[in-house]
Length: 337
Ligand code: PEP
Ligand code: MN
Image (tube, rainbow, N blue to C red):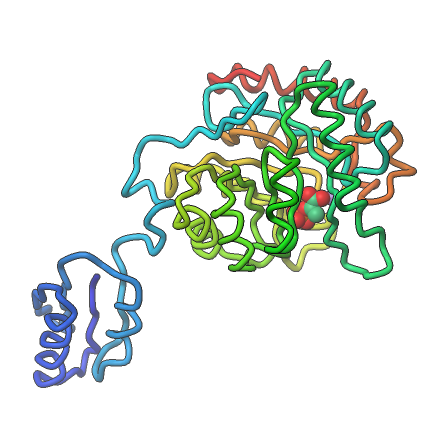
């Protein structure tokens, strides 16, 4: 940690901060420049230290050196995490594709589409049984009945099930049916939910909150990892900006940036990221070019009549074309699909 003193800081203030740093168990080293003094605080940075040093008199700013997220950080684990469950492997050379409708609508729907998606190369099946809807009047999901429909689709195809859990008290029930617990964007900072998913031991797909910074996103992952659950996937699903030509703004620089900061695999959701079906295929390709370990894509037989998110949903025919094109992009970046 570096404590930068104000240019007019007094010798007493520098001395006080030096003693304060030592009282935190760190070794202070004063570096006097022509205009400004900085104090390097050497030793293990712990949570709360920045807050303890920042209010000191004469302090301009405190710069942490280590990332605030420890378990998620590549500083402490350089070997990449690979999340494996049934048909799904995320983080290895092969790019995973999780596909399916926004909502589970009926058993026939989910089993039917799962068969087609498997045939076309998907390695995981998505579908919401608990739906976080902006309006309380919109379809809220079939809940446990929906989970049973997903389990039927898995029994039929072997595809690993990725489905959202919205409340800590639902974690045991959803974990009974699902292979991967999805934490939605709106719940990224629901810390009790993160802890409950951590405790479940099930792989987690953590979506980035629509207004969360990358540090907040990684600290949310830290909550799951800190409960002894190492199987966390980070999903970029678009953020809120002033731009309104797309539902959200999909920042793909997140992918290489997360790969630099963390060992956790990175998934991209071009469906929620754009909100427009016609923009999904190009953004799938761009995500793979950017280094994504997996895609999560909304696919429905009849998007016009989907109960949720129809406008950002592609058909199985388009999904087939996307897979063919993405295979070529994957090859160009030394991956397979
Ligand atoms: C979803 O996957 O259907 C969903 C609700 O995603 P998000 O939490 O990213 O909005
Ligand atoms: Mn959706």
